[in-house]
Length: 433
Image 1: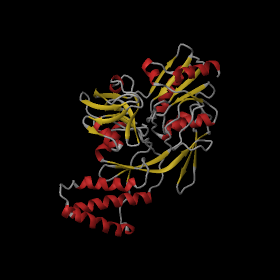
Image 2: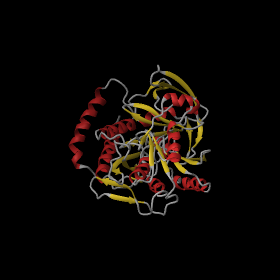
Image 3: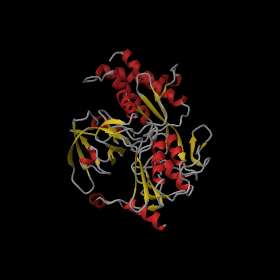
Image 4: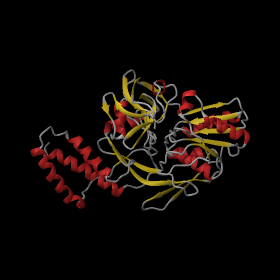
């Protein structure tokens, strides 16, 4: 590698350092979960589905939408404090170029490696660098259509875990379940890869096949072949149950999620339901403002939805902006370990303010807010700038929300096609206990 190419490495790392010092706040976020849905990678931001818009991300591999639009990074004018540090960098790299027995990677690979190394020192999985190809796919994910296997995924302790699958899509048809661990993609082990690298291997054009090695609790590892498909994400599902309970599921907080949800709720309310179930299970999050508007469908205008705290700025209290659509109907919210980020904002507000009973399992615990920057070469940088707290000042990040009525779904329930959480919600609304 030439010294000119090496300069590019240093400039990129310097850019990262400068951004750390100069970012302001924009209320955007991505869950660490990823939606897997297309050829490369996608994501959740999530937990990340393997289809995308959004687990936890969308898989085809795609990821959950981030609340803010990417903004240009700051201009680099110089970083005197890093001068001596980069003297050492050049000292090391000159020795590598002179003595290394093997092929020197291309300049961009070295650059990206240097940036990732710098970001890893922060110990924050939500502050990260996204390469141009992956960033382009994630921007495409916002369109709501992707190519992949159709699953939300997240990365925990170096392992890629299925958060949920899309109904009727390839991952579900192949028998993948929540909690399955992906050990290999084709013949490539993915343990300790970044979630973006892992997703890039799973995603691909519709009609192509990917082979996954799966580890499931209580079983030996096994392989599954899945034919990728183009996946259109249905944001809202709803129905009037035979018992007179209205049911509506929100799969992600996309740009128009609250409007679509409001439409479904109006249709249900016209049928005079005895109560309403809002299903946020497996919902990895999405746009922050959509979470506020969704909570506002059930809470009075001006009610506190969430508190945002920053490092060096006053906290901001975010309130509902509009009159509610359904302020009085008995309400249950279903959550699980795949309910993250914006889902936790909504569930936490409704729980704290006594507007809904929360049933299910502990939520994901993603309450960190990321600012998203689009960099000069099309790559993106996500930097954690704030944390979310519920109206009663409960921390979301790293904690999650405990349900008012805990109900687990076992492997036996899944095998038998049972949904004890949904049935417990209906029982609560019908009997009041």
